Image 1 (spheres, rainbow over the protein chains, first blue to last red):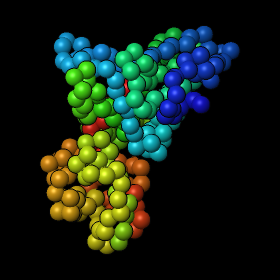
Image 2: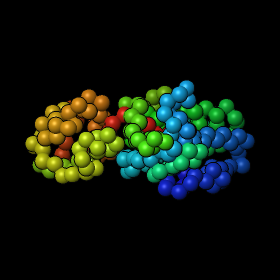
Image 3: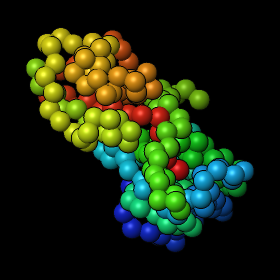
Length: 151
Length: 81
């Protein structure tokens, strides 16, 4: 699978294989993992995050992001998976793999895909704390994808 | 007319359900729908200013019309990644 939501651990090797292309000399990978505090400068101790989504819409948004990026950069291939369910500290929640003939496009695509997921994909985390409490994290107002052709 | 209401994250918590059927006046827009949500589900009222609303899987502006059988999703600010 090239883009989508998954219940099982993310398989980075399979994602690399999904975008493999003899014309590509660069593969960039971003992996986001569950951190042990909800704020790196302090905050509460987190033991797990439960991810949920408006699945049908989120799947379309992830595919749209990959397709938009590929359309904007010749030869670029993008794989983008987000995990759902309860993940322990250290487990990967998102993985983005971009393959491109050259490195600049691959690195830029990974960054842009991540930023777009964070504002366009209807996915939510509920943090589960060491003290037994839980809280929804609601960070970024959901925005529409940019219109085609607008950069 | 009847629509399907889906709620996520804190909106589901406030609604007390992830989904329900909901009766809405004919020829309602998304703007009308927001006002009716506050009337029919007072627990959602404090959240409404923060909620995006999607109609059939697409984020909808206030003047978008809502049709019979539409899937209406209440979407709090997101936190994927």
